[in-house]
Image (cartoon, protein in one colour):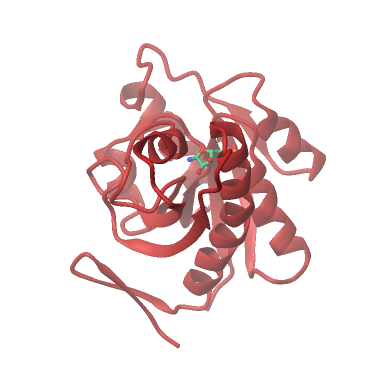
Length: 205
Ligand code: GRF
């Protein structure tokens, strides 16, 4: 299999991107981060990328607030293609990605979501799980389809909810598992082990 050529989209801290970069640098994941794009000018993900000498850029996504569409979507696809990206990694990207991006990278857009999907799609999922009284929360890495947090599931990791958990403490423990789950999913993809059958991802052993 060819080395994955990753384009990472993120809006925040970028700790998931960091876990992917670390796995690459340790030789555990056969991939290369070709470009990091953020819709937030001063997002820490851009700083982290620059520390690793990765190409990183801000993308103004106006006039939209919650989706990547129109001129910004076009520009995003253009930049990713210009860098030879073959796999798009959403890592804390706080916008819905739309049809054109998905069609430009068919079955090659991945997302990480801080719940055991299909429970608690949308925002602040760990808090939703806590408020619901769940005893187990977790994280899901999935392929992105046209819905919100509905695409075929690649990896899930469970996290126990402890008595006395706050949204922050639970989210912090979920993030520890995120940093294992994303590199694991990408590794399986890089090794050609993933196939999509209907809504199921089959992982070859
Ligand atoms: C993570 O909790 C991820 O599951 C969610 O957004 C957060 C991003 O964190 N989609 P980071 O920017 O990777 O640190």
